[in-house]
Structure formats: structure tokens, C-alpha cells
Image (tube, rainbow, N blue to C red; front, side):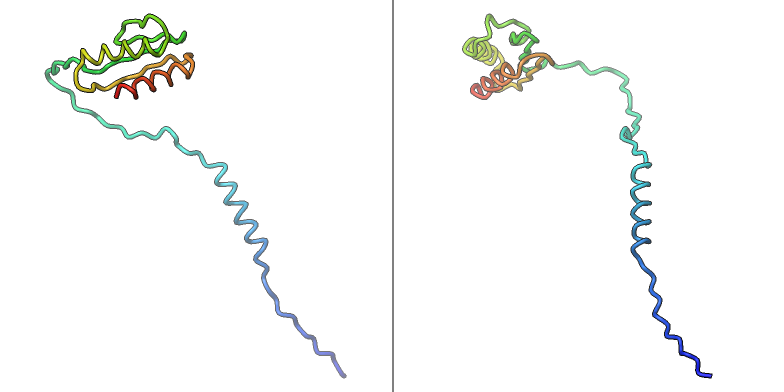
Length: 126
């Protein structure tokens, strides 16, 4: 009897389905993982026995309200013109002395132009 000899092909394992499954698992775990965005370090700060006296601040404060009115150290500036604000800030700086820090606080509803004007004048004053 003459039997045919069976030629066997080399069996190879295809890695494509395995890679697909790994990527699907990776995507699944990335989506279902919760991240703690509010992670904070808890610190117990020491308390003082006696309160130290607070030194008077040498800070120049410029406030801008929702209507765009300027207040230099709590005093309202007469109008919203840049020249008037420049004069009011230069007078407040003359009272303070050597380049005090400036804090600009603007209302959330104030327009951006009034804030930019205040920053421009502060830049010109130094």
C-alpha cells in the first residue's frame, strides 16, 4: 500500500488577537479607574501661645468694582479716566515711599479694559 505522506504546515500563533485583547483591557482599566483629584496632605500646624502684633501693611491697594470705578486705598477716584487714576496712584505712592507692593483686586463682573488700564498705569509708575 502506498500511503501518501502527509505534509504538515508549521503552526504559528497569531499575536494580533492577543494584542487586541491587551489593548482593550488597558482601555477598560483606564476608563474605570477613579483618580483622586482632591488628594491633599494633612498637616497639623502648631498653635502659638501669644499672638504677635500685626505690622501695618505698606501695600497699595487698587480696587475695581463691577461698574469699572477705581478705588485707591479705599478712596474712590473721581472718574474713570486714566489720567485721574495716574494722579491718584502717584499721590498714594508719594505717601508710601519706596516702591510698595501693589494689589489690584477686580470684581468678577468688571470689564477687562479697566483692569488692563490699571496694570498699564501701574507699569508706568514703576
